[in-house]
Amino acid sequence: MKYARELLKGNTDALLLSLIAEEPKYGYSLSKEIEARSNGYFRFKEGTLYPALHRMEKAGLVAGKWQRSPNGQLRRYYHITEKGKRFLEKKTIEWRDFSLAINLVLKPGST
Amino acid sequence: MKYARELLKGNTDALLLSLIAEEPKYGYSLSKEIEARSNGYFRFKEGTLYPALHRMEKAGLVAGKWQRSPNGQLRRYYHITEKGKRFLEKKTIEWRDFSLAINLVLKPGST
DNA sequence: GCATAAGCATAGTAATACGAGGTAATCGGA
DNA sequence: TCCGATTACCTCGTATTACTATGCTTATGC
Image 1 (tube, rainbow over the protein chains, first blue to last red):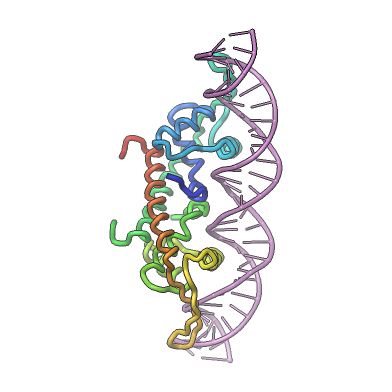
Image 2 (cartoon, rainbow over the protein chains, first blue to last red):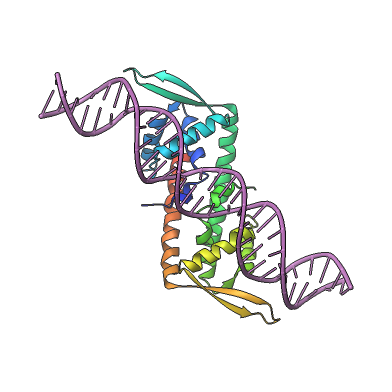
């Protein structure tokens, strides 16, 4: 059940973005949701999560907005931008091609 | 057709190892074969290939042996070790689980 | 003869996941 | 009412690793 940290490299942004694309979400909820959706496989550490969100905001893929929850907690909600949508689409295709290529080498013949 | 360099991280060793597992191979041939098997998708740079081979030899996953080709060229042939076989098996499963988890998040419901 | 391919090596750079550490507010139970 | 757990965010340093650039040698083909 443990995966090498290096595997995740390059996929973090797409994973987060695909959830944010559905509706605006904040950091903490993203970490919970990614864990739930992957059946507990992914557990994004905070040292991964927050820098990634900041990176994406800086790159213009998402836009953040401070908002107060019903009970008064401050949360930073991120929503996807047009640029982010294009990025996600590109990344999704990239992932499909990439994983296909890996499988071609790992298990040749089993197309 | 271009993929982010970060995606490859953590997969290099398994890809190389899966080819070496078939029969002893040397660096240059590995780079050609990986490109062929992946339909031109992967093009391992030398700065990726050779350090990876050294890394794996140091880790005891492969063992290298200098051998002269029919025409006299020196080549370093690598063959897989028992430890390498176990590693490859582990990595193959890890990749399967990992790519499954990614797909769960990227396209939920499409199991 | 000379360009090209075969064949190997490595030092430096950039990207990035994560561990560890820190802050603060809210909630639930004893 | 106190107190731990949960919610919610942030950041610095470290390790890993793919790749660029550079350099070397020998064989092959024109």
